[in-house]
Amino acid sequence: MFKTIDSSRISISQLMLPSHSNFSGKIHGGFILNLMDQIAFACASKHSGMYCVTASVDTVDFINPIEVGELVTMKASVNYVGRTSMVIGIRVESEHIQTGKVKHCNSSYFTMVAKNEAGKSNEVPGLIINDKTEVLRFLKAIKRMTTKKSRQEEFNRIDFAFEDYLKELKNYKVKIQLPDDYKN
Image (cartoon, rainbow, N blue to C red; front, side):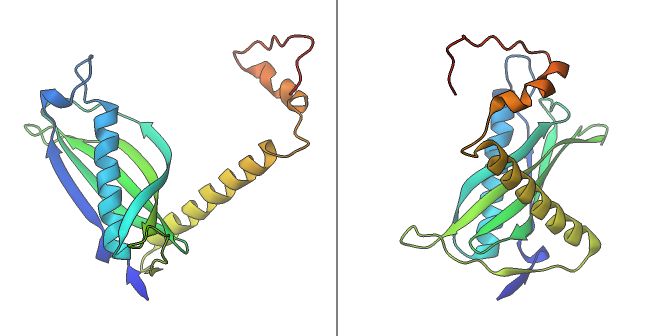
């Protein structure tokens, strides 16, 4: 079975209240992440028709702060499907209600896994992609996954030697001060 991306696309809006703010008076990032997890769950569950759990969150960049009194809108869509997992792309925007000025605040990618009644991972429907943006999002999801896998393989090798990488650290604000008897 295959489903269109539009069939599970979700959008939510919520007014930001003083109770959502951090010590600097901006909306707390943890509150926004909680809302993002909720919309990712809803989008993935709508696509799969099953209960879904968050497996990972990739690339959470807080681009612009959100102010108390702004209306936050989150848009979620399925960007990629595997056998039992889905990558849900989420865009967060805030709107100053009086001026109508909209700013992009955050984008992120949640990997969600569908679960059956027994708690086992369950196969999800495929995607019907029907525009260039959806193709691009699917391809970007593949690239993020292959890059992550390659990085994990590189640094988790049995023969990995950090000494081979020390020259790369010269351009960074770091000092390496390992004891003489240090063993990795």
